[in-house]
Length: 330
Image 1 (cartoon, rainbow, N blue to C red):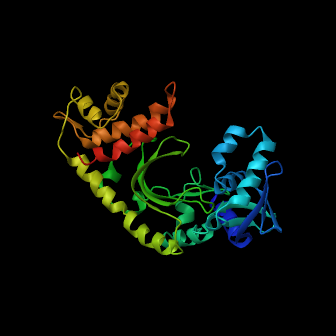
Image 2 (image 1 turned 180 degrees about the vertical axis):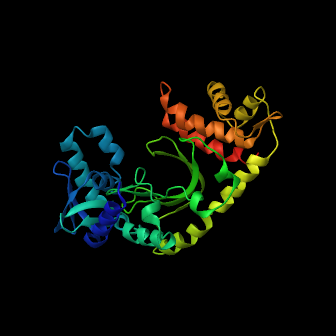
Image 3 (image 1 turned 60 degrees about the vertical axis):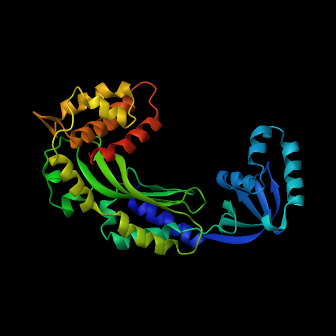
């Protein structure tokens, strides 16, 4: 998604999304509408509809009896009548132009406006517009995700940069930031190792150090500012990769599967990972394979091979990505 479009949507949300707190007095399951304080009516988008059932503690019941609308509507009415006083107050986040509720949350929830998050990102990274990876960045009603493009070429001199990596295996460093101002996830910051996966520019994101900040207080921006400086340290990762490249061999092609097994990598993947190392033998010497070679082979496999296998499971990819980073420390 283009940078200009993300900024435009975030600014619309900042100006037009409002909050109101009060007591839910009615939920129409057919029309998907909610009434607050007996006189304020809101349309419910899919997220707000599910959250309204959660607030009434009827989400699981609705899954079981969704087709029996009459029964469920009576269940909603009974629950509204019998709610404990401490559970009656809720917060609605809604679009003032359409009167559509975007979220139905507890009064303890504090949203971080996506436009404010973008302003802080721009302050931290004045070149965000040119550095942003628009293929992996987006914004919608429920989430914003910003991925910066690799920064090593412009910001550091290192052996990691000077390696003659083939097109499709260029590695850089960036920041991955996600937020939800409709209670669909915490504010998360990731220092990411980014691999240019294809000649069309799409990227594989191999997460490194990260932090998560819950929406439980009104100091989210301060926490965001503080944690950004702790997490986003490309030079630390470059130094780590330099050390990994220079480290002596720790295995041969025959014994490397023992290391992969130790890190919980499925035996059925071992041969293909070793093939990737042979195809791109960075970190391979006459003495054997070092940690960089294992890291490079595993991430190449995750990026280029695994998604093409029958029965591909994104969870396998997630686990492999988690396994890759520690290999640099071997």
